Image 1 (cartoon, helix red, strand yellow):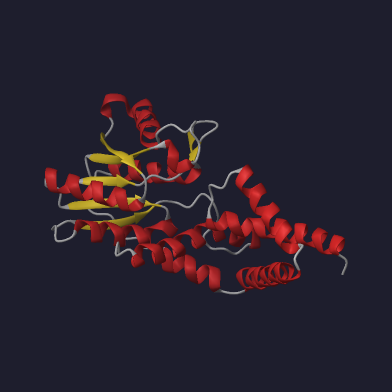
Image 2: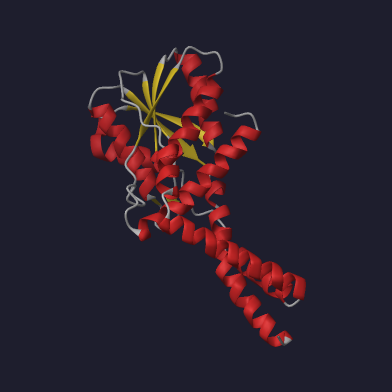
Length: 264
């Protein structure tokens, strides 16, 4: 194979592998993706680098076939979901999700979590909710407002003064910081039971992290899953299996990372 042909194929293979990079780091910018593509292309101009790219593309193809045509995706989605029956509690803890920074609106998973939390409040399970007051840096976009402040404004618009008591968890970065802030609030306010609301695939890591952060506190953490707006969790269509891949990948890596750090 001539160097020109090898360079062209390397550029194509690098482009095909970019979605894998986005699975591992969803906040990569266009510039960062472009640099990754360029680095892969240049590495492919070197015969050992080209063989590495070819092998990586082959592994991705095998994995995608396994993901689309085996029971693996459904098994993993079911494993990650911990959905318990709600009960009377002191507070409903609604975890932060994503933001659409350009439109300054809640991303679908954030909206689903908030709606589930409000359903629990309306049903009388708890008199208050907590919302995550995020910082723009976690979304990699300085235009992003606080997720918690945006959600709080929506709650006020819906219910005015008749809505739930809203407690903001300030300057949150991760599930771990949300868990630590909630544990402090529980100590200070004497809360004994909390309903923790998040997306279905995020529930296993969340409930384990919250229980770990509570330490020896006599606080019961009840995991309540919101709806899943990003894909049909029955995964009976190939499209839904592909849409589930980022969430499952992120949570499996999150579980591994949190366990290595002693947060579970």
